[in-house]
Amino acid sequence: MRKILLMLFITMASAQTYAQNQYLKNGVAVQGYDVVAYFESNKPIQGNSEIKTEYNKATYFFSSEKNKEIFLKNPEKYAPQFGGYCAYGVSENHTSPTDPQAFTIVDDKLYLNYNLKVKELWSKDREERIVKANQNWENLKK
Image (cartoon, rainbow, N blue to C red; front, side, top):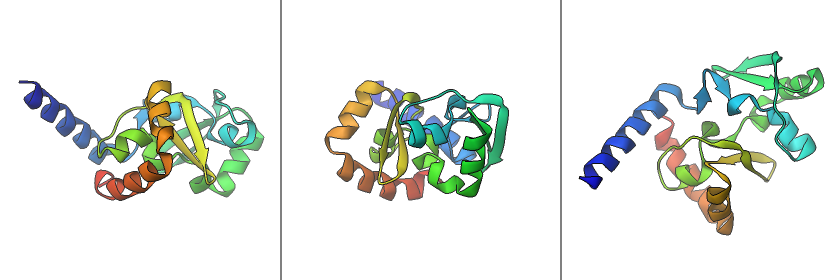
């Protein structure tokens, strides 16, 4: 019975991935956190819903007009990897939502994780997991 439920969950998660290609909550990326702030301040900062832009069918909020302008110059740099899904989950070939507090910047790219405990697991063999996640993402994002 557990296997059936697990397969059903994975199938539903995959269907959601195919529909969105990114983790969004009410159409908003990273639960409204300012993606530029991760790079500029090395911490999650809640964005302002009045300072926003659209990118890849998602709405991004920013804590300042300056951060919005920085994002607009190079959105691919600041958008989270794997469509904002959990980097650990993608390395395990499935998608999971993320906690904006559980982030890492590696090689100037933003990675998010399901929670702080999962981030800890992901960090133990991060480079290997990034390679696996990049391979898996090609199929998951379809």
